[in-house]
Every structure is written in C-alpha cells, then in structure tokens.
Length: 269
Ligand code: ZN
Image (tube, rainbow, N blue to C red):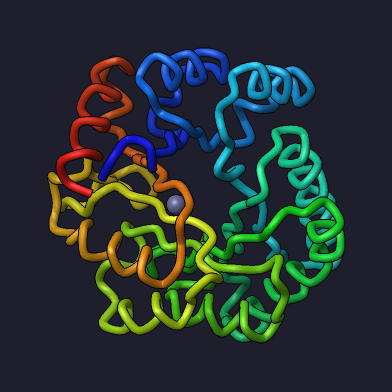
C-alpha cells in the first residue's frame, strides 16, 4: 500500500515524544499519526494540539476511550468522565475519531458487561456528536475478553453499532484482533461505511504476552492485502494505521523500527 494512505500509531515507537513522532512522520512522508493519550498528556493537551496543527499532519484517531465496565456505579461514572476528557483531547488534536477499547468482563456476567458498554457509549455519544467526533468500537481478540474488551468480534461490534444507530458510532478493523474470524468478510461488508479505522500489524506465534506480542507486517500469517481490499471495497477511504504493540520491536531503536515498518507497509499491506 502506498505511504500516502499510512498513519503511524504512536504505540509502535513508544520511546518517542509527540514532537519526535511528528518530526519522524514529516521526514518520512507519512501524512497522518494516531497518538495514544499518554503522549498527548505528556506533551500537555494544548501544546499537543499546537504541535499537530503546526505540522500539517492529519490525526487519524486518538487511542483510546472506552473501558466502560466496572464493578459499581461510581466506577462506571469515573469511566464516563475519563471518556469525556478523551473527547476534549481528541477535539484539541483535531481528529474526528476516538478509538474505544470497550472494557473487560465484570465477574462472570458477559451479558451485563456488554450492557455496560452500550450504556457507556450512549452516555458519551451526545458529547461526541456535538464535537463532531466519531466513536470507533474496536473488537479485540477473544483472549482479551476478561480484562480489555467484552466486544470480541466484528459481528458483535456491528451489532452494537447498529443498535445504537448513530452516524457518530462505527467500528474499527484491526487485523490482529479479527483476522481469524470465519465471518470476517461478511462482517466487513456489513459494516460498510461504518468502518472508521483500519489497523495493521501481523500475527506471529508463540504469543509472548497478550498485549505486546504483535508481529511486523509480513512476518506472520495474516492476509493483509485481502483484508485491506475488503475494507476499501466496504467504503472506507481513510488512513491505515501501523499499530504494533511488541516487546520485541519496542526493544529496537525507533529509527530501525520505522525503517522496517514503512518498507513492510508498502510491500505487504
Ligand atoms: Zn488497533
């Protein structure tokens, strides 16, 4: 895929500050970035907005809101408040998409936990719509149901988005989370223009840690071009984010990681 479609998700090179990420993107001809909130907060939200605007780069999304599930009402309210702050940060950065990692299982109650997710999204939706920011429900691989997201398939994410039925709620297709799903192709086409983002990495085994074991594009078994083509034909025309959470790659110098990632983006996606 051409670099003109690329966005650099900052977690790929977490040793870099927001300014350093911006400088790298400008130097390497990457037109967009997708920051995680920690580096935005480290820069200061206003300063982060200034850095991004001065760069002329697009911000394809802010990672992340969500984590709506909690054992009690106070916990759920705290989560909503944090999501409202995330929306303010997204607005300051000028992005129109906040990624939602929906929240893990509470007790043994999958149904109740999923209801909390829906309630949480509906609670912040008026604020998102007022700010012109769309909420991207990102289904995570089922191994993360207990602690990260009770929304584990693209089908579930589509169900949820359809039930809420707002132009400000859509889904994210992150290949690492959904590549294995027998229903992937029909769910991508069902999502259609509700696809708000597309994230790439690869699946390599053995898994060394559920959060930080992603492979570099081309090193694993995911048919990246096929998924990218399906996402495009569903109607998504936005950036494709390089998002590699990997202890292996985090241990390498950032310049080397970016050399390899961009080469692979062009060759393998
Ligand atoms: Zn992702």
